[in-house]
Amino acid sequence: MHEKGHTHEVRYDVAFIAGVVEVHDLHIRGMSTTEAALTAHLVKPDPTTDDKLTDRITKDLHTRFRIGHSTIQWERTLSRNTHAQHRGQQ
Image (cartoon, rainbow, N blue to C red):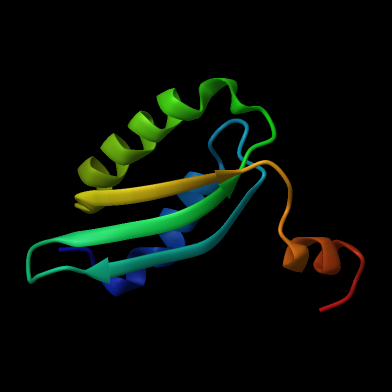
């Protein structure tokens, strides 16, 4: 099962996938003593490769972190929190 300390590593790996400009609302939960599930919102303005990247991310998460169930929600614009942070607000 996924270890809780890996959340930052998972976020880092997903954030550096070509085309992804933001990762937010990433959650990893244990489904049982041997299974973990991930949900995440990824911002990527160009929808062209969404399906291909979803497959790649799902396989990588399973191989590297033993996360067997992944739900990726693609978004096209930055979240409100990111906009506020870029303007120096919180």
